[in-house]
Image (cartoon, rainbow, N blue to C red):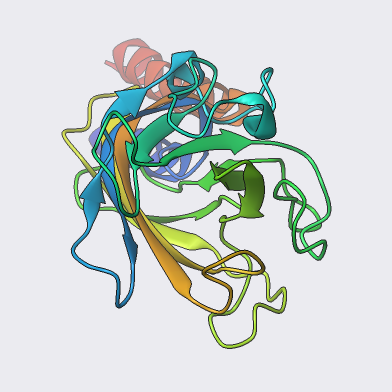
Amino acid sequence: MNFTMTKIAAAAVLAFAASGAQAVTVSSASVTGGTFEMYGFGAPIAFVNFGTGSADILGYDGTTPGSAVANTSYSADGIVGFGFGAGIPGSTQKTVNTYTAAANLGDANSPAGTISGFAPVTFNVTSMTNGAGFTADTSAWFANYNGTDFNQGSGRNTVDGAADGSFATGTLSNCTATSCDYSMFWESYIVGGSFDGNTGAWNVTGTIAAVPEASTYGMMLAGLGLVGFAVRRRKLVA
């Protein structure tokens, strides 16, 4: 009976630990690589510039407004940058600088906005394990090209650009207890400018850091308490 109690308590710890693994708060997300593609306009273009804003994309960025950056310059405050269109890369070719900012998702030519109920950029992760899938609200992501800011985050459909609340989707890899590499993808309808009506495709890679929810610690302590109680009771009976 005592041995059975110990087994039950141990199973409780495992159950609590398993349920705790489902409670994840992503505390930061860096961008370390990725590509942009506009369908019908050549192959995917790799990100070549990583500004100070790439350290953490969860909050708002863009202390230097996109329109204030020269067409052929990379923004130090941007998240990532790359060359797009005709011209000489790094010289006369126009650049794309990306930011996150607060505005209304339905306002076509303003910096990107947020889907109701979510933070500017939110990673919805349920398990910090290799191969686990996740969704992300990247609706606050926008790109500056040729002096104009374009909403290029998730949340628009690719037919007419209407807000639909869609998310980026991704997969985790190289996970530890508190961090994982990630790869995520989303498409975004382009409204306005020379490429109006086209679709941009974003592949973004990086690393997320996470902390367990307070409830996780509580459940683990409860489980350990059950084990301690069972072991103590067994000694007393013996």
